[in-house]
Length: 130
Ligand code: MN
Image 1 (cartoon, rainbow, N blue to C red):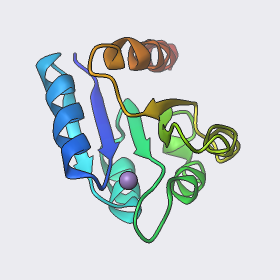
Image 2: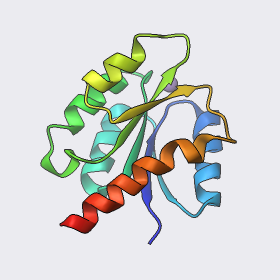
Image 3: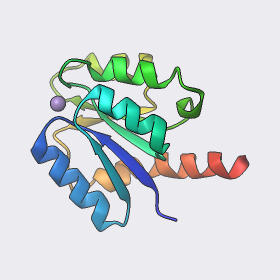
């Protein structure tokens, strides 16, 4: 079964581009446009992977990741932070907040899938152990 990916992003162009790339590969994509919506969708849909933009309105990505980690169902879900290249501190802060990894923006459509697929394999292995 193809993985279910939750993508939390407030930028419509990124949302469109990444969703297109993931759909084309056969992944199911759930979209959220702000942190609270993303948290609610994560709780209800238990995605295999979460892509989390760090710069979001009202609640930033760090708070979103921290909140998600307080839910037992989301404790081990891979969360990949989408950080801005210019903001050096974003990476460490993302990992401190509970993210599993990070990808720097701007996203490269050519390498994006190879960047996220290792996290999906880990997630599948984890589910298989249960
Ligand atoms: Mn943003």
